[in-house]
Image (cartoon, rainbow, N blue to C red; front, side):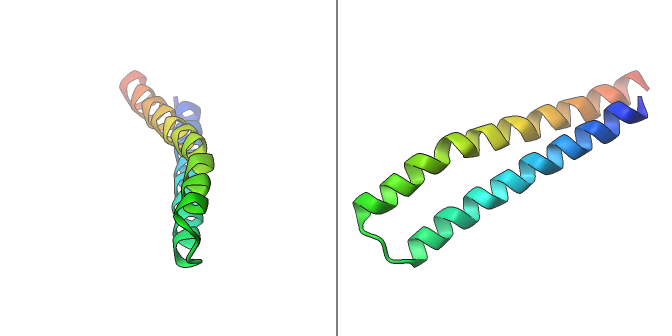
Length: 71
């Protein structure tokens, strides 16, 4: 069960890294002073990656909880 816990922790950390990357990407676009349409385009491209990173993080946390429950 330790492998499930550590694997879930790694998966969750990867998801968290993806979420941080999405935040930094949009933050840089906002600070660049882009027009409203250009900023919307950046956000439109980041949203699917953001949702994927969030799903990865949730799956990792579910694996951790399952490993603790079964262990």
